[in-house]
Length: 78
Image (cartoon, rainbow, N blue to C red):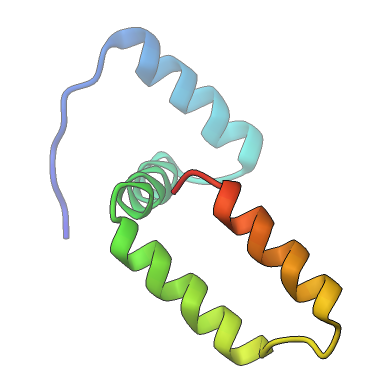
């Protein structure tokens, strides 16, 4: 889908430089940036993705590793 947005000149220039450096089109850069922004602001989707990844990996057989991972995740701000 196509859309038009307004950007401050300095943001546009920085985005243009970043797109060139990353060898991406501006359109791809903006789409990737917006996708990342939406993902960061959709905590339920992030939680679902993490749960799915954890299910795929399964719990390790080492109790120490499982406990360390649990404590790390508890300290992580979502």
